[in-house]
Image (cartoon, rainbow, N blue to C red):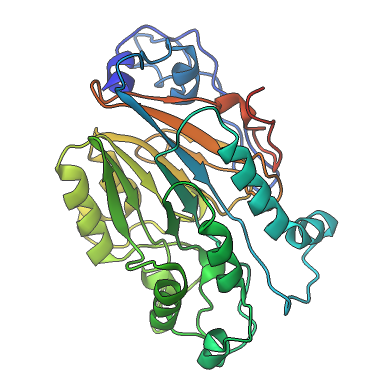
Length: 343
């Protein structure tokens, strides 16, 4: 695969992309040259993608997918406010901005095969009565999302985020039923294969940190659970070039979920497989390039709630197994903002 091959080149002069936010870990220092003291740090994969020649798609060998995150759709029962002026302003514009993101994607001069949303599809639950969400006269956030997503010109695949659950007040099983009935989400983790690539969607709310009966219960952190981690390993072991998507970014993902070192946590599983092209998450609402500090290249996407230009377009080459980011420089790193496509 192109990404793995280019790690063998001498790229020690590249500086790492500066990125971060006030509530994130410090920006990594620049890559340093190899010395007798030890090997150099691998260069930043995002910078490498930008500097590589574009894919040759003259033979109908390419397709595109789009990635979005954190729409946070609300309904008429939302009362607010949020934790600050920016958050409150953004949540009141969230529904309109999801529509705006759709319109911008439809305006792209290229077909899009699939779209993926990386969690926090809705913002909140306004009733503990399950029947509230099935009352025909109640236009809930789930209904609003469904009405918008059905207007997309391509299939839209959802990951669930922390706001899509209401633990411990509402059983996770009910959330799964509701998303299945309202949005057609048959499973909360699954994979989509398209022309030789695999797109793996995970649920970072299925582990012990999201189980109120567990001693590790703490919904500040995402976790996956043994069944899902072993399923992920099986999916990756088949060898297809794979994108792995989930909601919680790695700074708030639980470590050492299992005693088995090969399946200890999401980082261990991803780090065991060289066919992981990139892991993608949301939750932070800001663009953040985590590089390879967590087992594989990992990027957190900005939120459409804050900016309708917050989406990435990935182009995949079905012959080589390579991929390109078509608009990496629309991300304003460490910020909720995005530049329009194309710049």
